[in-house]
Length: 488
Ligand code: GLN
Image (cartoon, rainbow, N blue to C red; front, side, top):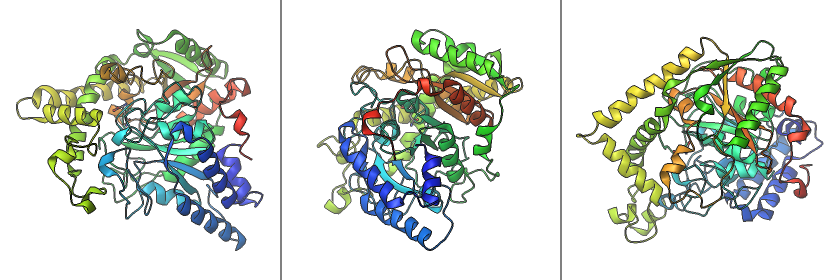
C-alpha cells in the first residue's frame, strides 16, 4: 500500500496511527542489517501517533499525512531526539528545536520516526562515509544504496516506511532513489525551508521527499513546501497542487533529451532502460526534442569547488566546543575537531572537503577557483534557461550506472564524484528535479529516470513521472521487500 492509501485508511479509521508506527519500528528492527536507521525515535513516534488517534477519536478531521510513519534523514533536527548527521562531531547532540519540515509533517498528522543514516554531513554518493557504519542496498546487500540520503532510500525500498525525507545538495535524494527503485524529488531551490537542516552547502541544499510512488512523493512535497521566514532563501510563492498534476494528461508535453547526458560513461543497460522509458513516454503522447546543455561537462568541477567552499565555511561552527557530547566532557581542542588524536572528529571525506574548500577560498586562489566556478555556474544555469524556451521538462538517466558494489569507489574519490555528473547541473541551477524508477537492468537492479523542470516547474515533473509510472505498470515493480509482506 502506498502513502496516500495509508493516510486515507487512518482518516477513515480502518488503520490506527499507533499500529502503523509500531509496524514501522518493528520492520526497522527486523532489518537492522541494512544499517539504514541511526535512531528510531520510538517515544516521540508513539506519542505523535497517539495524538493522531486521539484526534480522530474526538472526531477532528485529520491532515493529509494522517498517521503515516515518515523516516527522516538525520541531518534534520528533531527536538528531543539525537541528531548527528552521520558525524562523530555531533555525537549525542539532542536539538532543542524541530526543523521546519518536521513541524510541517506533524502539522499534517504524519508520525515522524526513524532518523536515517547518511554520509557524514551529507558528503558522499554511496553512504559509506557515515561515522556510524555504512548502509546496504536492500536490492543487493553487497551494493551501495547511493548517497548521501541512502538511509532514507533504503528505508523506503525495504518498506520500513512508505515515505521519507532526504536532503539533496548535488543529487543526494535523486541518486539514492534511483539506486533503490523509489521516487525522489529535489524541489526548486527555496521551495522548502532549510530551517533546521544541518547545512552542507547553503546555496545548493534542499530537503526533498522519497516515496514508493509518485503520488506519495507529491503529497509529501505539498506538505513540506511553502514560505518560512526563518530561511532567508525561502520562496514566498503559492504551493501548486502536485497531486492534481499527477492525474493530468501528458499530451503534447515536450521532453528535452540532452545529448550530453547520453555520452561516454553511461552504462549500456542503464541507457537501454532509459531509452525504453522515453519510448513509452512518446506512446503516452509526449514529444521528444533533442537539446544541448553544453556546459554539463564542467558541472562536476564547478560543483566540487562551490560545495566545498560553502562547506568549509558552514562547518567552522563545529569547533568541538558547542555541539555534541564533547562539550559536556569539557574537551574541544583543534585536535579533537580534526580527529587528530582520537576517533572523535570529522571523517576523511569531510576533512578532504574542508581542505579543498579552504584552498579555493584562499586569497591567492579565490579568483582562479571560486570566482571561476561562480561564473561557470551562471553558464550552466543559462544552458537550462535556453533549453526551457523549447521544452517543458528535460529527461535523462539519474546516474550513469546502477548501484555499484560497496567498497568499489571508496579509494577513488574522483570516480565517486564523477558518478554525480547527471544530478549536479540541476543543483547548480537551482532547478527542480525528480528521479522515477523505470525498468530495472537485466540483472535486476533499479534504474532511475531523471526529470528536470524550470524554476517552480514541479507540477510538470509530477505529470511526466506519473505517466512514466503508469506506463511501467506492475511488470517493473519487482521489489526486495516481498518477503517482509505488504504494508497492511
Ligand atoms: N554526492 C554529492 C556530494 O558528495 C552530493 C551530496 C548531496 O547532495 N548531499 O557532494
